[in-house]
Structures are given as structure tokens and as C-alpha cells.
Figure: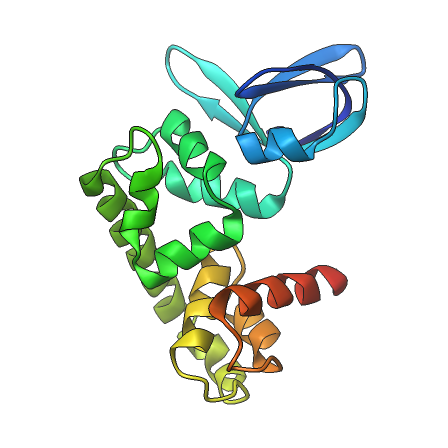
Length: 202
């Protein structure tokens, strides 16, 4: 399994970046947001990767952040969403906005992506939100004490926690990060500050 690649960018196109590592060029399919954030040809870059294996094809996908990679891996578990559709969706949104869209059930936001119809968008929200709910239930015992310290802030707090779970964090980690924030803040700001706090603690 290739966890990541780091090296010089030797080629960029509309949906691909080639990173040269030790004399080998790794072609990574990716999103527009990663392409725009990774620098120019000739500069160094590091991408978190996912190796997608099928009977007739093997492709490497690369992302600038672990959050974007987590979103991609969740998307391709949805029936009817392949890697191409996953990249298209993530090219039109940020990981934070994607997580918030799933957590709030706002499927219409995904229909703005070319090739993503209402039925598929609804399936993405339904399946991923259902998966989050199951993860939350399975981790309820360990997260119980954490939730005692979470300020009563209504839906904003719970939606922020759900969105962080979408991004790959555990229920306990998400609840701990949100616990000391102002519950009156918008959900997107709660997510952003929580990610910043967790990154600082690494």
C-alpha cells in the first residue's frame, strides 16, 4: 500500500499530477483543489495516496490533505459513486463543506457537480450519514463521558461533530475538539477551529 508520495512535480493536467520519487514518476489522479494548492511544475509536493485496484485497471489517487483523502475513500463506498465521480464532487467543494453537507443532509449541494443527479446525491447523503450514525452508536460507550463536557449548543455542536466524523476522526476526538468552543459559532467555523486544534495537538 502506498501511503504517500513526496517529490518533484514533473507534470500537471486537469485531473492528474505526476510526482517524481527516486527517479520514478507516480501519476496521481486528483481534484482541482489539490492541483491548485500543490504548487507549480518543478516544485516539490507531497500527496496522500489511495491505490484503487480493479480487474482491468490499477490507478493511484493523490490528495493534498488527509481530510480530502478520507472524503474520497468514503465517497467511493457509496453504491453508484466511482473514483471519477468522487473526484468531481471533491473538485467542487472543500472537505469541510463536504462533511457539513453530509452531516446536514443538504444533498442538493452535490447536484451542482456535473454528472451528479438528485438520486445519486441523495444516496451519497443517505449512505454516508447512515454510516456516521452507526459509527457514533458503536462508539457511544467511549464517547459518553466526553459528551458530558460538551456545551449545550443545540444543532451546531452535533452537526460539527458529525462532520468531523465524516472527515475521519473518531466520535471521541471530535467531541473533545468541539467541547471548548463557543456553541454559538457557525457550524463551518466550529469545524475549522476543531481541525486547527487537532492539527496543533499532533
